[in-house]
Image (cartoon, rainbow, N blue to C red; front, side, top):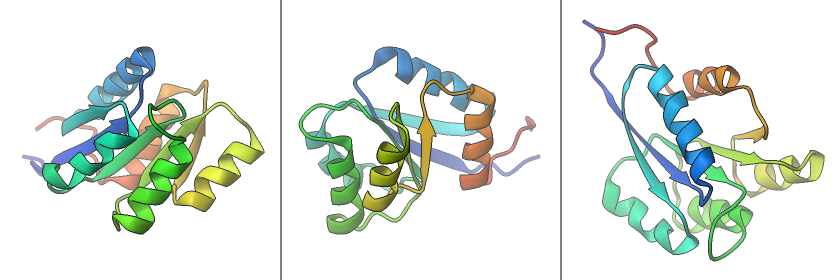
Length: 131
């Protein structure tokens, strides 16, 4: 039987289509993963209430402030150390800003879902086989 570790992934996004794509990508990993979806900067305070978070995904569209500021606040002020993935449409400048504010990875939209699964597997010890 495989490791029964449960992962918690927090997604910040107002884009319902993007959220569904991320849900399907997580399902492809065939792991016990809890996905929590928040839409605004003000939801950032809820992260500590959720306990341990294994991965945070930030879409470029959130309510309340820039997604870059959200990453910066979570990293620097809240001291959240789990990996961050930033998903955005801009080229070099967007990637540069995301990485400088604390993201570990930048994924340019549109993206290939299989490559995102591979990124998840690099960040978390996910299993691809069922128990």
